Figure 1: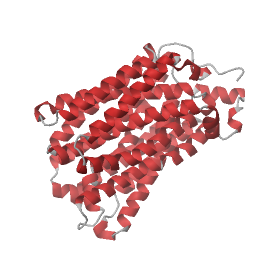
Figure 2 (figure 1 turned 90 degrees about the vertical axis):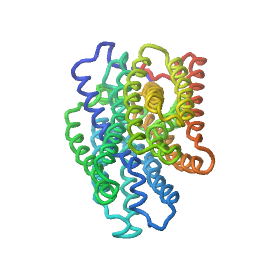
Figure 3 (figure 1 turned 60 degrees about the vertical axis):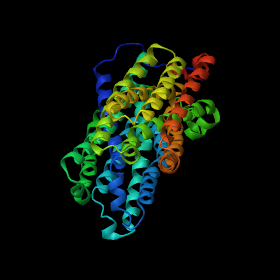
Figure 4 (figure 1 turned 135 degrees about the horizontal axis):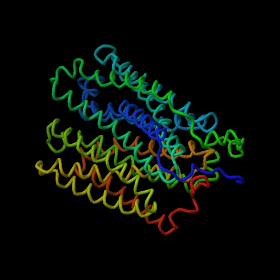
Length: 439
C-alpha cells in the first residue's frame, strides 16, 4: 500500500502512555476477573445449579461445559466488536466491552438456584456466560491493539507485556477473593450466600472501570487512518481481508493462542481444583500456591514483553516456551511432595509468563486497517476451540486416565510454541510477515 502508515517515532514512554497502560490494564484485570471468577467457584456452582441426585462428576462436567460456553461464543463477539473497532475506532468498542461484561457478572450474583426455579437456573447461568463471552471476545484483542498503537514502536513488547500482566492480575484477584472466602466463611455460608459476593463485587467494579475508561484517548494510528482517508482495505469486511490476505499470520497467531489458552486455563485456573480432587491438597494450600503462581505470571509477562523489544521474536519464543514445558513437567511430577508445592508452582507460573509476549507477535503482523479484526479473529477463534474442549478433556482424562494428563497436554503445547519460535528463526524472524506500520 502506498503512503504506508508510520508508527509513533522511537522515544521513551511519557505520562500519557503510562495513563493509557494503567487504565487499560486495570479495566482488563477487572473484566478478566469477572470472566474467570466462575471457575474458582465451579464446585459450589455445580452443587447449586444442578440436581442434588446428579453424580458429582457429571455436575462438575456440566459446570465446566457452561464455563466453556463463554469461550465458544467469543468469536462472534470478537468479530462484531473488532469490525466496528476497525471502522469506528478502538476506544468506543474498548469501553463497550467492559459494560457488556460487568452487567452479566452482577446478574450471576443475583440468580436464583436450582432449588428455587429448577432447570431454568442453569439455563439463565448459561445465558449470562454467553453474554460474558461476547464481551471478553472484544476486550482482550481490543486492549492489545489499543496499547500497541499508543506507545512508541520500541516499547510495544513492554506495553503488551504490562497489559497481559494486568489481565493476569484479574486471575490473582479471583484467587485472592476465593482464598478469603474459604478462609473466613464456612462451607455452609459459602453455599448459602457467600458465593454471590465475588460476582456482585466484580460487577460493581466493572462498572467503575468502564467509567474510568472515558479518560482514554483514541489511538494515534487510527486517527491517522481517518485523517488520510486510507480505507482501501476497509472497503471489504475486515475479517474477510484477514482470511484472504493474511492467512499465514492468522494460522501462526491461532497456534500461539492455543498454547496461551492451555497455560492460563489449565495451570492457573483448573490446577487449584485438580490439586484438591486428584492430589488431596486442602483448598487453602491449593489456592495459596495458585496465588504465588499468578504473582510469578504477572511479573514474567512484563519481563518477556521487555525481552521482545530487545531480542528477536523467534529466540524469545523458542527459549521461553521450552523452559515452560520443562517446568510444567517438573511441577506436576513433584506434587506427591507437598513441601515444595509453593516453590514449584510459583516457578511454573513464572515460566508460563512467556504467553505475555504472544500478543507482540499478533499486533505486529496485521496492518492498522484490519489489526483489531486480525488479532480478534485469530485469538478468539483459537480460544473458542481450545477453551471449549480443554476443560472437558482435562476433567475427563484426569478422572479416568491419568492424574498427569494436564501436564502432558500443556507441556506438549508449549513444545509447539518452541517449534513456532524455531520456525520464525529459520524464516528470518518473520520479517516478511510484519505490517509496514510496525516495522
